[in-house]
Length: 128
Figure 1 (tube, rainbow, N blue to C red):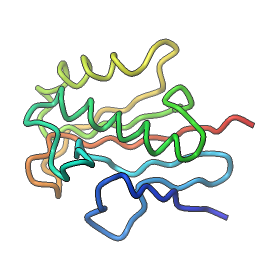
Figure 2: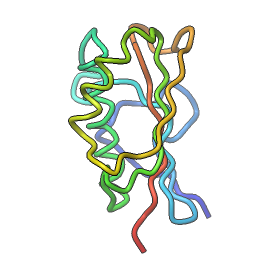
Figure 3: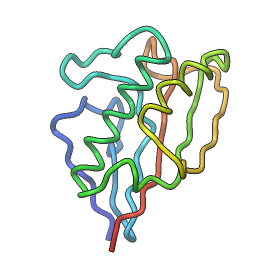
């Protein structure tokens, strides 16, 4: 049975969803913007800072499931402006090492969080 991870140290979701759910030995992380949980605001106004914050938030969610970024097998990145790809990639490379997770990058029109330049969602596989 799926179970939601309770991340009281993260920002309040802006809709009826869980930040992350554990099911079938996997962690499914919802689309996450670069919101700093300490302030409730975006971590910055550029893709580099927002990407760093997204991945810090991923670390918090995964820790609640006794997992780490090394357990991620797939990441989807949704960019409002594909021109932000290099700065997103620069921050992303600071958190992941080879072998990198599989990844999909999609250009999108907008996001519900005002000022958000990107969101990421991910799937991690728990160690048995």
